[in-house]
Length: 161
Ligand SMILES: CCC1=C(C)/C(=C/C2=NC(=C\c3[nH]c(/C=C4\NC(=O)[C@H](C)[C@H]4CC)c(C)c3CCC(=O)O)/C(CCC(=O)O)=C2C)NC1=O
Image (cartoon, rainbow, N blue to C red; front, side, top):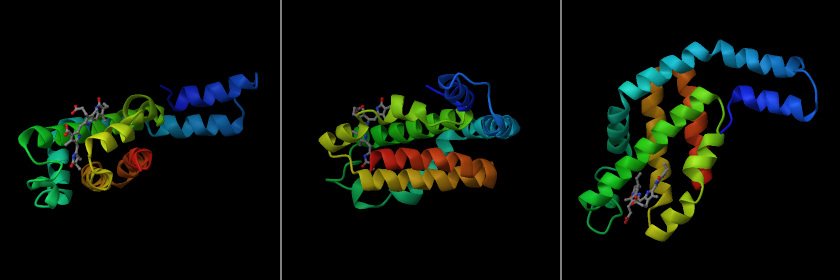
């Protein structure tokens, strides 16, 4: 896993150089948003179950997916879906704190699309639910942190698509 700091340092190190102005500006921007990131992570972790529940209500409930024959039908599969959404929320929060999406590639997206396809988990509906989480999260943490979280929710969606 990388973060905004190691990403900048590694890029300088491969060239054998001290951080140049552009690299320092990147670090400055990251440090300047530190407080915002920690505050957003605190709010998200205190409200995680609500965020997932509201996102499901907005995107999946009362659709064919929750009816007999749908992929969320049966308590076991419904619970698996809720659990997956909680994974996406938690890992997007980690990535937002780190300011870098690499943790998503390594721990979430690796092999996920293949797993979903082999189990018949609908990717379009999953993307809709993640987009709903993005909206619910933004309404809770405010526009600035919401936009930053959106980067990582979108990253998961493009990795799945
Ligand atoms: C931390 C990284 C990580 C991820 C991301 C992960 C995902 C993941 N989701 C799974 C299943 C599943 N995922 C869903 C999800 C859904 N079905 C729908 O219709 C909805 C659209 C959607 C929720 C938004 C469902 C229903 C299953 C169970 C499918 C089945 O067994 O038939 C499975 C198969 C094994 C299992 O059931 O536990 C994995 C590996 N596991 C991990 O360790």
